Image (cartoon, rainbow, N blue to C red; front, top):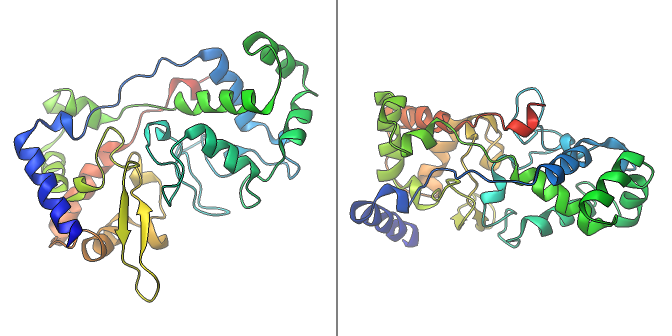
Length: 276
């Protein structure tokens, strides 16, 4: 019942306000290049972890750039993630910096200790020079700050952003129709803002288990970031699940196809920091 009310309200808002007040294009982020490049080096460095893997293990930023991986488990994409309001599935963390710290210390994730991480950094004369020039000293807080700046540099627009900015001819008719369906079928209730998600909690019905509140993920690059909710491997089956378990709305196969066509316009360009 609550979600039905939200869906009606979202449509009302769209009818009484401009689209830009509900979904807005990605704004450029003027990041600190020195910090971001240091953070990039730390992100990819396997020597900082006792098990010899880097952040790249779970957040792929090479080859097909997705910001996520399927193994050892499905990780949320970090592309454009700095624009999220929530940074975890349960909506407990509202700080990117705190999320980075937690992932470093989590035994199921990066699993390190600040003392070991910093000791490894201090073995590298290049790192020592960079930290001294940027921060004045080497500590865990500064290392996390550099990685946070790198993640903020992963903010990049898609064709959808240019469409929002008034470039109407960048979308074909199926993409435009898919966007309209995305709005009027209620997807926008949970997936709004510049990141089309990451900003509210949604009640998910789970057959045979407890229902849960979960952060509505960003839909940026969604066509590249399977698996989805419940480890569903494709967007069509995901929409079939969501129309029954979340938005409770009628969606034909043809309508779902057009929404998927729209979702593919959310693939981001490759950020410049990854191009060198």
